Image (cartoon, rainbow, N blue to C red; front, side, top):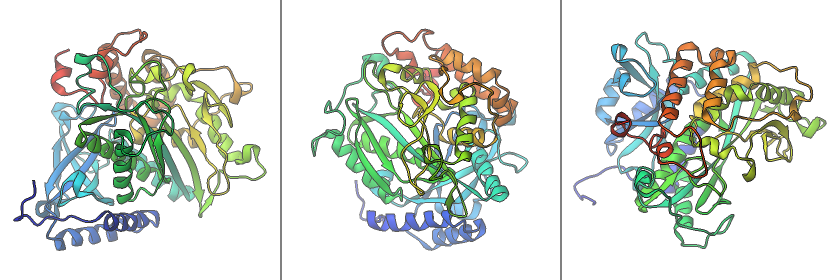
Amino acid sequence: MSNPLQDFLTLSYAELEELNLHAKSQRKQRVPAGVIQEERLKYLADEKRIKAVTVLFSDLEGRLHMLDYDKKFLVKSYDNLTFDGSSIRGFTAQRESDLRLGMDWSAFYWAPADIFGPGKVLVFGEVIDKDGSLYCGDMRGVLKSFADGQHAKNGYTLNAANEIEGFLFKGPDAERRYHETGKFEYVNTGGYFHSLPGDPLREFIDHTAEAQRAMGFENEKDHPEVAPSQFEINYSYSDAVTAADQIQLYKLICRQVATRMNLTASFLPKPVVGVNGSGMHTNVSITKNGKNIFWDAKGEEKISRMAWQFVDRILTHGNDICLMLNPSVNAYRRLDPHFEAPNQIKASAVDRGSMIRIPIGNERSARVEVRSVAPDANPYMVLYSVFKTGLDGETAKIKNLRQAERYLPDNIYDAIANFNNAEWTTTMLGADVKGRYAELKQASADRCARLLGTFVKSAEVQYHHEVYNQYLWNQF
């Protein structure tokens, strides 16, 4: 309900897009952090219509957390923002709970007032440990540090574009009520590319796409997907950290728009058995001096030798990193060969059952597509594991590695075992963070039926890391 006494910032979608694209160009041009910080602080001090700054960060499993700081307080105290890390799953123990939030001023977004409320802007935070270093459990900080290191050492810019599928279901809280209803209700049964103008699915896609465009996503295409009530809204590639941030914003926008329509946007990988699941196909490439070094007009499938080495390393460690790409009990329903499931640890230009696909491309768009990624995965962990493995992993001495008869696990227990037994995951995460992540995944698995069976069990939804609440979790 509007209040004429309030005078909070409300910008048109065109104004929002202009501001957000300018901020995006600053990130792309690597404008020094100090310059951007000074600019943002001055903007916040001068713009009287901003009441609060929403600071976003993600826990170890990828669940997004948000804190609203009064604008005046933040401007004075941005370098001393503390929070209780022991309340965040996967973060610190109670005895060592204090963590800080630093501001990544380059990841600053002007948000649509009709979705996020008037008078607010968003900024992504960096979790800082007590000694002032980046917190090891903050995968955003880990990814950013790795990406910055690759640029400093090799001149590489790590690029990613993600195709994130989801479902739209009836009711505003369909996931949390699944244990009561035992089913999800479609809002549309039109199928691939088919949704009449004005129906709930099309209206949802339109509103979400408009909000994304306003936030500088640089949209490409959007459409209903193969399964009933399934959607996909595509946008342009970005550097790896921005791409991961945009995944978090994408899901947040979808959920906000759906809730306002009295519906639920779900990113469970396989909420309904018998129809296609949802994936998060992850397209990656590397540029150096503005040139795409994955491209080679004379190379096999027109990608470079370096790109193929990148692919071979991911195939080598496919089982090691599977839990990082598919983090939930429900995710292993999706790795089903009957629905174009990418569960074969091989690479192909045409076979959509392959873990890695080489799409048709040109000098600008040549890339590698990692298909065996679930939409409920921590996006920072996904991109870190893909780029770290592709650049620094080992290459197995397996005959015909790219077409060998090898498969990803079909259940989370095998995935946890592979993750625990792999030296490579210890190298990537460190023993402490690796152990905490495995413990979280094991705790979720233990709350669910061991055999997946032929229908989605309530526990695999109720105790899913993007669905659960602390009250339900503690009742187990």
